Length: 298
Figure 1 (cartoon, rainbow, N blue to C red):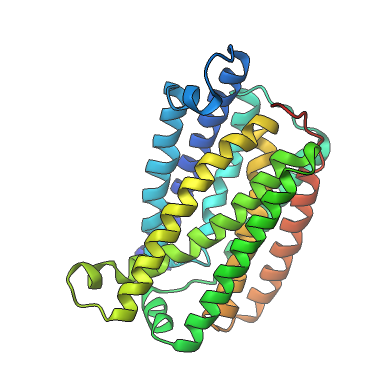
Figure 2 (tube, helix red, strand yellow):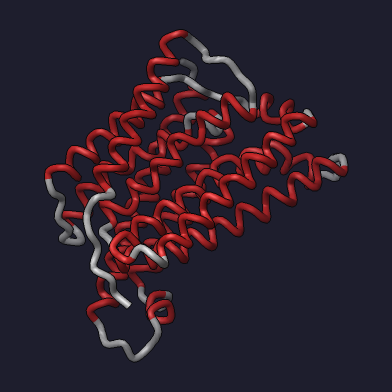
């Protein structure tokens, strides 16, 4: 493994740690506001809370920078799994910082999630920036990208709609809806990074410029909605449950990206074993972590 690859791996892990630490701070601020008086609206008080602002700086600021650098080095297949290494920080911090509790099935679920993510990471499904640019020049691939994008937007919309109807799973369903949006962010950051220099220097074709504009729009939209909806999810459920549940689609989507969008073959025969094992463990973990009943708070 060369230094470039190892640097990408290190940045992916760092991004995960910063992102989950930011989420812990955001959840802590949500807990504080829930205990305060209700003179002002929830979000108005939240954006004025210094703990919440610090969480956004760590997560959306530092975590995003490390994530983008990792994506540019090792691509969209490996980075989401490496980012999820922050779940270890989340598990410990939720108990120590936010006084959350984890029952036996949730502890097992968190462990299985980490093992599943590790297995997916070992699959070696790296995608280079060159492969991204080649794929963006292929009309059939662009059609597959459009299908992938529409389906995941629909999944997010349907799951979020269910959250308004199933009160004792509201936080989990909001988190799952955010997970589908995160899948889109994880993918569309790659066309943005692959084309940004070409577009800024005025050397892009009309198609490349449109792809760049679409990527920028989707990333801004997803980041805004995810940040907003995460705070709602934290009102109803523990961070130690909400964040891992969102990881279920986030960890499975890169497999679709690798095989469906980029139409690549596994780098080795053992990679298929890691992919299947990681997928099964991730799904089981999501089920275990999503079983806790929530107390509706309006």
